[in-house]
Length: 145
Image (tube, rainbow, N blue to C red; front, side):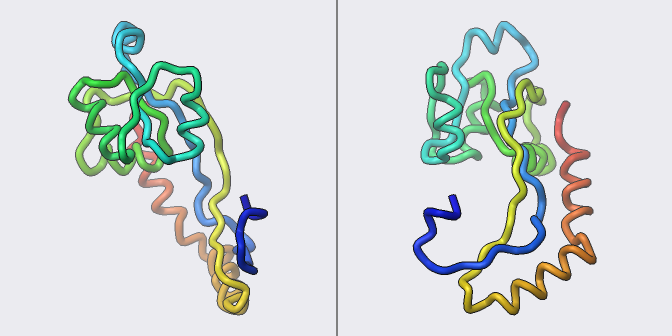
């Protein structure tokens, strides 16, 4: 995707967190067979994953998770961090289970090349202090499984 940027940029030397995307489904196999999978319209990786699958689109991931909670869908593709965050805030009932890992990728920070000095210092800080480690651990602990 970097090749699609239209301005000169620099990327952080180290990723912030690593983002994992999974398919989260209702624990009951009968529900999975009966109801469509919800997904967020406009999220390219979700749309690609859903090609050829029985699905229903929503305007964002929160609406998708709301539809799951009220029993309108059997599950949804999502970043694992979003599922953990939602589980902490409002809960997911019943807790969905991850049935398929879709992708996993490091999340880097990008800035305009004019800010390269700042980003170099920011990268050093990330590498030395690992400021996102605690957040990632807390979120992982709240991922339903």
